[in-house]
Length: 147
Length: 103
Ligand SMILES: Nc1ncnc2c1ncn2[C@@H]1O[C@H](COP(=O)(O)OP(=O)(O)OP(=O)(O)O)[C@@H](O)[C@H]1O
Ligand SMILES: [Mg+2]
Picture 1 (cartoon, chains in turn orange, blue):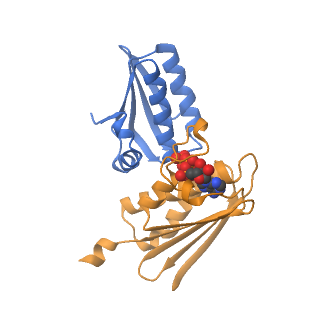
Picture 2 (cartoon, helix red, strand yellow):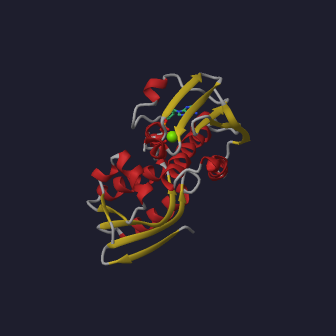
Picture 3 (cartoon, each protein chain N blue to C red):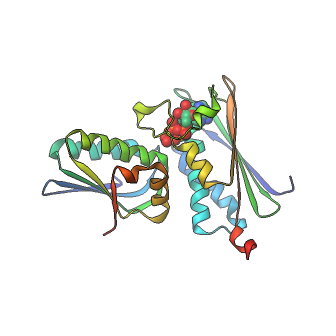
């Protein structure tokens, strides 16, 4: 992995930080010169992953969320969002669209579907009782390269 | 409060604004539901003209209101969603439950 730039962010799993986290990552990736649609895709994907840490991973408690973002060669953004919360017993099932363990809280079960469709790639690793990490990548400005 | 609500001829319109995420959703839900319970409208219009961000928590908000409205035979309209918000709505399939319109 040819890393051109990197940042790390640690913050408390409180809902006030959802807006902060997505804005911080978008600020970092500004040097890739994303267009409005790309910024919006990244903003939404980060919001989904961070919200999952707050709502699911640290349900009933407050823990630390860690974001690592990198700029890779080829104008690619790498984002890893990690928690040390409850973990996911069945990742494949959790990633199915509309699957949610919190339907009574008006959760739609769409977070992973949004991350998957708005980013180029999504990888989820998890261990029950130890935590979860979500890694996403997106090439910025692909439209220019193709011409 | 990031929502302004108007009632006219059995239609309730909620003009939402700002960012709709998990942090903002509960207050919006409370305000909108209070109006629904008071007025029992036949149509609930959710206006997204001034919404600058929405993730799946917003989809949950719309779906929840859809359930309440259809519970007493009312319907729901999603009005003027910005293009990125429309993208999230389309992905969720909520556009099959509620009409998306622009005025
Ligand atoms: N970081 C996490 N830690 C523990 N469980 C998680 C985590 N992220 C997701 N999950 C589990 O995976 C399920 C699916 O997540 P997803 O984001 O797709 O939907 P949701 O959060 O339930 O609903 P929505 O994102 O639409 O509000 C969750 O209901 C939860 O059970
Ligand atoms: Mg989610």
